[in-house]
Structure formats: C-alpha cells, structure tokens
Length: 355
Image (cartoon, rainbow, N blue to C red; front, top):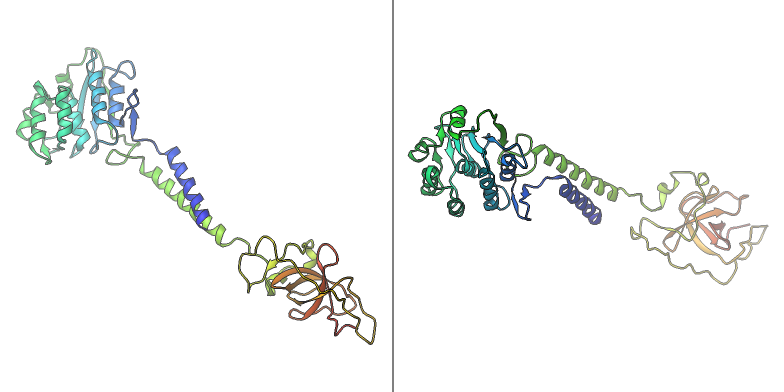
C-alpha cells in the first residue's frame, strides 16, 4: 500500500509542478522578480506593453512575493525613465501591504484614502529605494515617514504622506499631477489580479488549489482501495465454490494458491511435491480405477464435480475426479491424488475404501 500511495503522491507533485503558475517572473537575465513588479514594468515599457500612462489600482493588500525585489524595482524605474511614460497608483484597499507601499514610492502621483494605512518597508528595501533615487525630492517625505515608524503602519493623513506633493484626492487630480502627454488615454492594471492570486498577492488561485487537492485525495484513495481490495488468492471453503468448477478452464497444478491458514502471500514457486515410490493397490472385493502413477493423500476443499480443489502440503491444487462411477467426495474428505499428466491432478478414492 505504501508503494501505491507513493505513486499517487508523485503523480500529484507532477501535476502541481505543471499546473501551478510561478509567483515570479524572469527579468531577462535569469533573475526572478516578483510578478507584480514585472507586470508593471512591462505595461509601462512602450517596447513590451502599451507605454504611456499606467494607472495601477491596488484593490487588496499587496505582498512583496517571491523573487528579487531590487531587480523588479530597477525594471520599473528603467521603464519610467523612457519618454512620455507615467505611473499613477490608486490605493483602494484599507491597507497597502508592503508591495503597495513600494508602488506608492515608485509612482509619479498617487491616491490614498486619508483613513487608509500604508505598510512600512524594511531597512533593506528603503536602502535600495535610496540607491535608485526614489527618496529624492518629492518622494523624500513618504520615504522618511516609512523609515521612522519602525514596522507600524503609516496613515495617509499623517504629516509625512499628507504633505507629499504627489498625493491627490482622486484619480483625475492624480492624472493632472502626473502630466501625461496630451491626447493620450491611460491604460489600467489591477493588483493583485482579481482572477490570478489570492488576497495577499502570492500563490495561485484558491479554486485551482482546491481542485488539485481534491484530485490528489482521489488519487490516494484510489491507490489505497486498489491495494486493499486486490483480488485474493484461492482459499479453502465456500470461497472456492462460488463458481462451478466446470465453467472455467482448468488451472495448471504448477500454479497453486495458498490456503487461508497459511501466509497471505504465496511464494512465486510452490514447493516441489514428493510422491511415494509405491503404487496404490486395488482393494479386495471388486474392480476399481487404478492410478497411473504414485499417489499421495490430499484433503478435498471444494466439490469435485468433476473438478475442484484439494489441499496438499498446505497448497490448493486443481483436481479432477477420476472415478465417475463413484459418488464424488464431499469437502473435508480424503482422496488419493496423482500428477501423472500435465494440468489438473487426478483424484481417486482412498486405497483402503475403493472397490
């Protein structure tokens, strides 16, 4: 069963690898950057996306995600340095999340409700922002506010963010501050994507995960059931008499099955049968069928009509009743058997009772 469950888990792992989208994207030089930063840079780059003015709406708290955040910031800054490219960020969620706070630093102009929170950034990210000149001039006040709160949220109505000249009351005012080229219409991007990630901006859709988990549970259950209910070997008693012996082909005596009292898994090759050198002698008082070879006693386990099973040395063998003029023995009685021919054994009445 462990092997079957292992195969099911391996199959599930392969399905996850092939179907779950990665949370990062390649920056072109082999570096993996967070997907939301890569999408923002591509949408702003005239050579890759639409260029012009991009309005990014942060509808839920945006996590940083996996990948090199510094490389992703560099990609956005590079796109913003191209002619006629503007970035406007509109925060609609009560909390920006660290990814949303980073977008606010990158933006040419932004809209944040006065009662909304702006997540603080780590010292490492703030140092990267300073090296990329994101804390110079108009962005300096928000950068200082994020550095001074030491892990606590900053409110848009606090002195630092409120005095940031890039902040606007609504989207139209923010577009005016960004000064997009005349006659151009902004294009939009929603982060996290409403149909691409869960609430924190990391990972695949919840519905996809649930589907994969359900499929994995079904694979494991199927493996367990197939192992637990695999058809058992022939055993003694009524199980062997479920179907009449004459309805199927004879079973070669070289492939016997273990009885229920023995070990559940029979060896590949049953033990060699040993036969006495003497031949059974006819009983006095009448004619009888004479075995064509040496005989051994065996116990009948299913009715011999004319074929059934007998037990010999703890193994079940297919046997044919060789004395049709006598009533076949009932299960539990003893018979003499011989394997003088290929296929099923031949069963005879015991030597001391045949007549």
